[in-house]
Image (cartoon, rainbow, N blue to C red; front, side, top):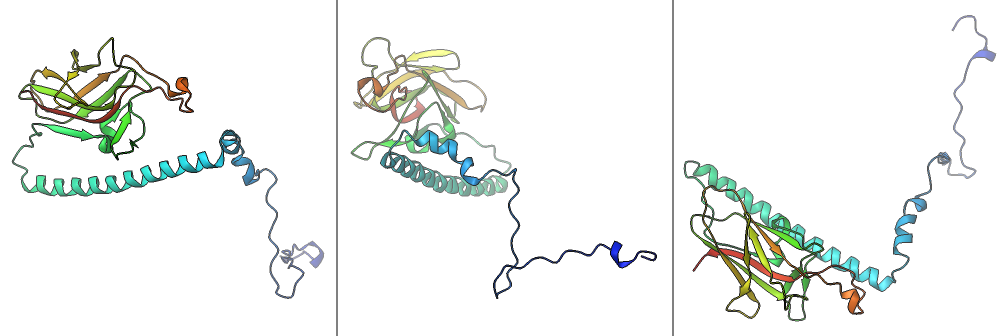
Length: 237
């Protein structure tokens, strides 16, 4: 710029190089207002301080295994839904009819159940999920309601609900007691009357008595109801 001598010209500073023969450029220091990464995980470290490493490793392995299983099942569900859409598009003139019966196993509860704990297995490999921590657990079905239906539960354990107030099922405002069925672990309720429409059917299992294994000397402090292996809706017989 005319009129400015060399003393007033701003010359960009040359980056300083590290004091070695390779000529690496020195990196700038981190801003002072950015906390070290260690402080970000401090709350997690404090929360885990009361647990031993073996317990943490076991819990992490269980969560990782269940997450991997859920991802595999989700991939299968997404693929099935794509095939379903292809079929429905080819036969768009034919209305979809829900199945006359439907069964949900503990492995496949996912979004169909609300108010259950993580998947567990007993020493025989039987899969189940405990209900809790509330008294009510919701199960949702897409099933044909043209005929009366039975609600069938397979319960691996009934917890503390042995005597006294029975387990009940609520469907659309009506309450049905669960009574023993043909199988030692099976309980049945109904008949649930038919209705029009294709809306999902919500089944609410009411467990009157909850228990905490911690009260019996265990480290498990969950509020548990009953252990559900499967639930199904089927035509009443």
